[in-house]
Length: 470
Image 1 (cartoon, rainbow, N blue to C red):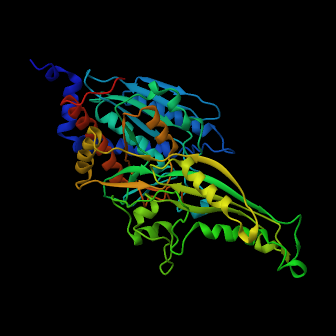
Image 2: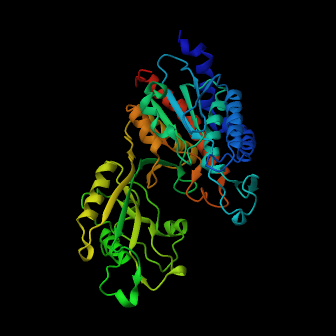
Image 3: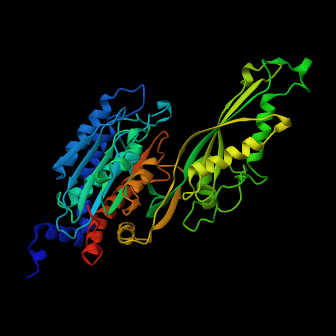
């Protein structure tokens, strides 16, 4: 006799697998109601904001997890860090894999509330979606995980580990924590639900993240400012020295001209020029900088931005030669390049310069690694099947220029786990901006994709892919 035929866990998983669309559609009203409850809480884990709403969001999230069938719920409390919710559901069978589900329950500050069409923490129905701060980033993705657990009545066909962070937006001690306690995060695959589709309706897996590094460059040329009429023309202007140095960082096309930084063609899907202009707010007629396709410029090549400049402001400028100037540089690097190596290359470039014969003081700052996923394993194959079913079209692969330090930390903690980044956001959702929204079609698609993935991945492992030692 086939023992699986009498196993209620397997039977339940089979019922969902045979009709996942109907299962998910029946859940959507409840998922949306609970998403609105969660989004109404201003869980901003930034200095200067009350910690009470963050704890309120934590409590509601824990209650939703418990109602979804997760009995084993805990908490990580790290220094100066909002609580990290943990939980687990044991694998239903010895050959079932374990999947870690990540999301975060904190949100960005709303910014200037006058720019919002409705109060940011009053979730508002709009055509095809819901508007609120944090509704897409990342509370919709959190509800995708909870909805998938509901789809299986809390008894999914895989083991589950839950990791819901409470201070992702500001950064915390948790970013570097996973490699220190790798056994807590041991699993076969992870779904990092803090991303979404390149455009609504296009199922998307994010497979690479650029690394980042900071460098400070400073010039001091005079003891104090001196009269520009009396001394200008011979007295060295610190701002001119700095600007001449900064101008060497890019070539005539706007490509980064620092030796030792990796760049290669991007072979996945990329934004169109018009999509990028709309997202970045670049007016037509203003050229984009750099050469090559957008994927290469944004994801598989370096980018250098002057994010800060200390110099006299125009409105208070005196007729004087500037004695001191300083700039902060943000460097984004190829996902596979060591960020310290790239930072060293930039520091070396700047220290070699002597604009007008004057040396620069160059100081390295923080650096964080990127990430590039291996996409040929059983979890990725199951994810492709699941996303194709959810959206009815072939999934695409993209990268992101933003760094997600936790992903590299989890990759170091569990190097053999496959890491999948997908979710209910989309590039037009206004995350971090006014009028952030989530589309119901994207929320349903992500929930359906995760529900199908859990069944598909379990079946793949039963067919012969042995789960990792947990």
